Image (cartoon, rainbow, N blue to C red; front, side, top):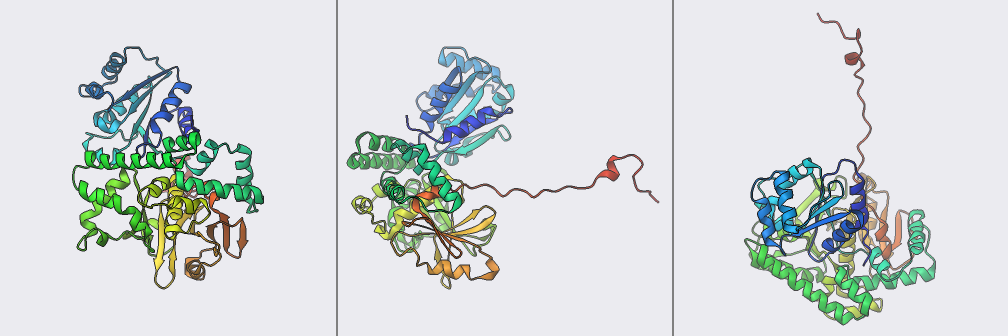
Length: 459
């Protein structure tokens, strides 16, 4: 089975003493079900799995009284076997089909006999159906397609190589030339294959890019069927936006232009459609910021955005015909480098970075603006050999009021620092980690209130 790093998050969740239910969200076909099933079989004596699509009658368990005893009795009757308290994982898959099950999680977690993992692919688009949410009893993690590290592991790259690369990233030192060139080749393959587990497995088994493309087109067709099935309103608008993502990214400025759909189209009328695609995990919006300063969310200009696909391999298969040979031969500038930029949007999102970019006529456009280690980090993605030419980066580095101390350029070159600019190979984006800003330490002197005889006099 393909190795998924998300398994470590499940292990960390299990090791916490006071466990909530774990809700694993994400787009279809990203491998949620198979990974959670593997985790349950390896880490528990008993796995009780209910899939609300495969077994629709299971929803009846949650339509009566939502007390733990009644639900447990219903689950054991459905499965035909008892559950072992303290060593059972109850896995509620495709939970968007049974909103009442999410409502019941509060009572099940309070009961404490079993551990619970929920999984769903269209939770955001169906959430309005739930009577209430188990606030305080559920923690959510989003699962994405396989990242470059997982893809490399699937293709036999040894862990020792990752240790060397991670050290080079941390210390800012060049990678050995032979390793560097091999990783560039692997990165180009990843752009074509992407991270959908079934697609990756097919590539590992056959190395047949024709079979890979067929599987990718099947997944895209399944996404279109989901739009038709689950979007209560505006399904035509949602499908139109989804189908236009490749051509919009192919445009030089990448910005999603509603006028491409209809000359009179307005964001207010289409916003629900964009939100549907985002919540379904299919698309990744990247918003413009008015200035490259923290906090970025306060500077968002939400009417100006790019829309990326959640998987770079699907983008290659979604209308960007015959780009695979060019990419394999080292030309990542095809389609104006849009596939390359999409792969970084996918990588940054998977690492937890909110996606932003910056563009102003006076300065030019910077591909990504990230909040990294409590600072604002401009990032450029370069597809060609002239990667040291970056006028927009140079312009914003000179604005003293923004106090930008460093910028990164991901490129085909090796690790190198020139002034404020750090050049990194494309593949090193996998080592970036997003961490929320730590709250500063704060203390208050309350001794006058807590020690007898020290209270101030009144009067």
